[in-house]
Figure 1 (cartoon, rainbow, N blue to C red):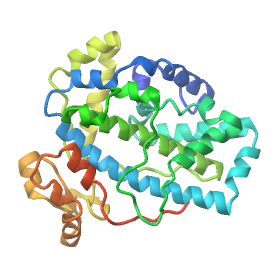
Figure 2: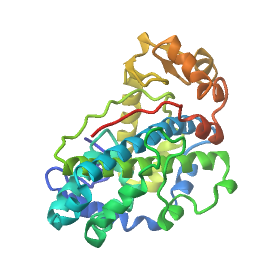
Figure 3: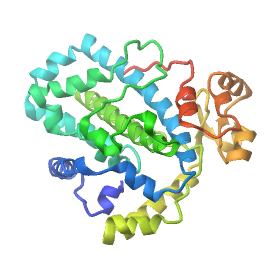
Figure 4: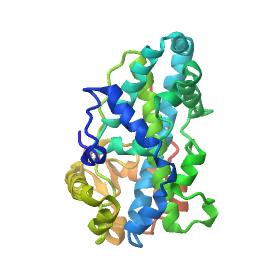
Length: 332
């Protein structure tokens, strides 16, 4: 599975040599502390790009809240039913590292481009997760466990860090523009989603479960690259820009060709020809919000869709309307 990481010349295969692949990643993570991701993103994308980013953030926020509920239930069952904490701490370093690496690899190969998100997660390293005899992993897992797993929280749990604060901007949200908030939301979302996926995949590997295939669905907005995209990439990457630009363009085309969609209410997977779409959002913003039935469309209206129907998505409306009232049970 191709990623920007491999397109830039870091071609060690994760399955062929997991330890070498991880060493190269950890060496890169140590160099990231001085990078200002926000500054680079704002320079590349024109004004107005935040609409698509905020719409995607709204979708990702919902998935993250649901997944943290799933992760909590899986972890609780492991702690109570399987005595996971004791078994984890009693395992040898090499055995724990085997499953930590497997968790990283499963996460990085879940879908196209997933590996690139690891660049935002300095915590995903053997040194961090193995700290205090394996307690680093346990502390991180417990950090993301929600207090009430019987319902899905409307606010996800994030993991702050001094390095990450510098990574994005190093300023309070109240001082950021709408465009800056959009990019910060994007980076916060992909970072914490990646970390939670890694935690779950490590737990699953430790218990002997196979990797679960991920269902890819079409995004609600069409990705469009800015007119200055190639010029900006050339400035940032030099001779590496050409293969990276080619890969990104392939990803954009693949996203447009994806035929599977998900119902905005019940998340049922289907084809666009079988689903209804909000005509107002489609007409005004080329934003496609799908529903598998009239009942689902009505159920989603008050708690979620009303806040954005026919309106520009703002950081505030994306945050407030991301999660509906339903909870999705999950068992490992």
